[in-house]
Image 1 (cartoon, rainbow, N blue to C red):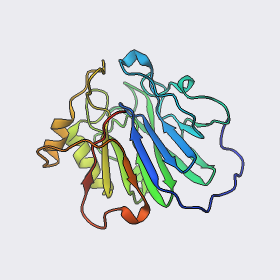
Image 2 (cartoon, helix red, strand yellow; image 1 turned 180 degrees about the vertical axis):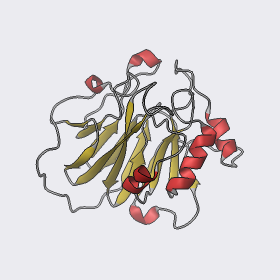
Image 3 (tube, rainbow, N blue to C red; image 1 turned 120 degrees about the horizontal axis):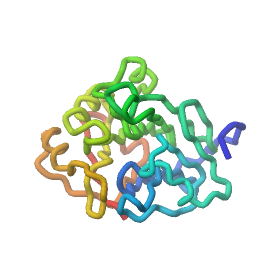
Image 4 (cartoon, rainbow, N blue to C red; image 1 turned 180 degrees about the horizontal axis):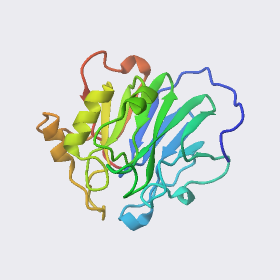
Length: 229
């Protein structure tokens, strides 16, 4: 089921709760409204998430990002590519990019999603592989409150490249993703290299990020490292 019809916009403001399930998979929740991004296959060594969701975003068709079957399908709206969508008052824009530094010749295409939810603008970069963001992509992304960015290298940008991309986008909060964690069979770099690149010696991981728009930092950059459930 795809978001191709008008759905009434909600007018009640809720707290945004962001939970990371490993790799590039996130749960976004606001009241009873739930979204999921990039659920993965158990073949990568982690247990796939399974929870009721109103919408599902898939950045590209690889097994560690496209396990739609793990999400209950009843009333689920799926978005899997570039375009503009309105899902129950959540505005979603998909922006086409490349999975590698050779214009997709090695790993194909990738979709960056910009999600506006509870007045907060979230950018999920999927498996972005370009060494820097092209000007047209940066313009399409616009201002960002929360940036979810891969930092583990090998199949995406690495820690140094991620640092540069962050400076280009200039978000208020960064949530690193797609790096080595216990149980993951994919060969990625750990989070430490990224934190060092950002000038941070260590960072305690949080269970989830919970906030309203008024809680966003007014200045500076806040790095939030999340645990998996």
